[in-house]
Structures are given as C-alpha cells and as structure tokens.
Image (cartoon, rainbow, N blue to C red; front, side):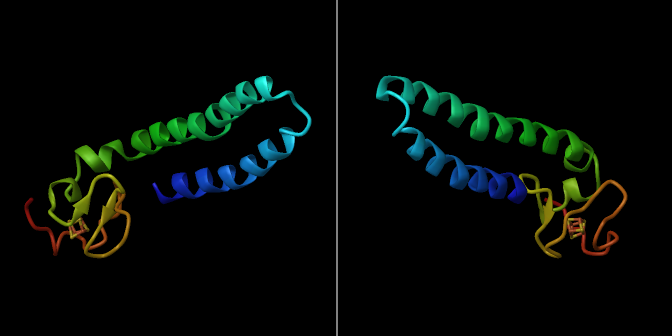
Amino acid sequence: MGAIVYWALIRIAILLPLLWIALDYIEYKYWWALFSLAIYGIIIQPIIIQYKLFKEQNSQVISNSLCSTCKHFDETAVLCLKYDEHPSKDIIPCEGTDWQPK
Ligand code: SF4
C-alpha cells in the first residue's frame, strides 16, 4: 500500500508542474480537459490498477492464512503489526508463536 501512495505522490509532483507549464501553451478551455484526462490517466487509473494487483497478490494471505485470523494482522496493509513485517503465504514472521484470535 505504501508503494501505491508513494508512486502516486511522485506522479503528482511531476504532473502538476507540467500541467502548470502547459497552461501557457494551451487555451484555457482545452486545458481543463487536458487537466482532467491527465489526472485520471496518470494518477487515478494507475492507483486503481496497482490496488487491484495488490489485492490479487495478497488475497490468499488476507482470506486464508494463520495471520488473517490473528488480532495483530492489519488486512489493509497486509502487515503484522506486532513484528512490523508483511506475512506471505509461505512466511509467517512469528512462525505461529504469537498468534492471538481476533
Ligand atoms: S503475530 Fe504472528 S500470526 Fe499474528 S499477524 Fe503477526 S506473524 Fe501473523
């Protein structure tokens, strides 16, 4: 999740100055259309795609793992809050010793 936010901020930091510069070269009425398309195509759409990929890649850990039933597990970040590590389908950071029911 952090990577999705990080790259979204990078794209925003690059895109907004470019759009600001484009304002000098494009008529204002067309600039808003360009602005809207750029925001959607370069910022919002990649976030949606990256989030879907994130959910697909972690669906098994989120729904069907030891960590998914533990109170230390944060589903939104796929993170063990106790160990501050990302469990995977093959790796459980505590190896089951610190599991506690939700
Ligand atoms: S404490 Fe252990 S079982 Fe619970 S979320 Fe962390 S790694 Fe998974």
